[in-house]
Image (tube, rainbow, N blue to C red):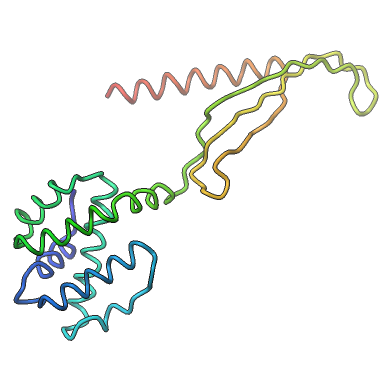
Length: 193
């Protein structure tokens, strides 16, 4: 995981007992826990008696560390090693952050899976063939129509499953299949690079 210089500086300050006292460290860590679990909002500038900017920087840095660790599925031992090696954390402070990470990781990853706008993923397709004898204007049609349904999974927790329906002629179906084959070849070509 790569972090910006501001995040690195905030994490180094947060791990330093000379900058953040033990009570302030615990208060800030509790506030991070409340924020990540959605239990309570926090006025960060009033958490500790130190400068508001350093508290805000440390708070944002710890939040970023835990969210990025959850996003990359970092193991607790990897997180501990990173805190100790890259940010000079002592054993107790590192252990407290790792314990917090172990506790909130499953819920954090569930929440992260709901973030973003991803197009629906097609999980199944069904079709039906119909013959159209007449149109609504009472003209003779005499054509075959394909009724296609794509069943999808979305990242929206309110509507996890959706069905996309459309009707096409044989020529439109051939065009759709050709475009899908072209897309598959293009994706395979990109995947080989």
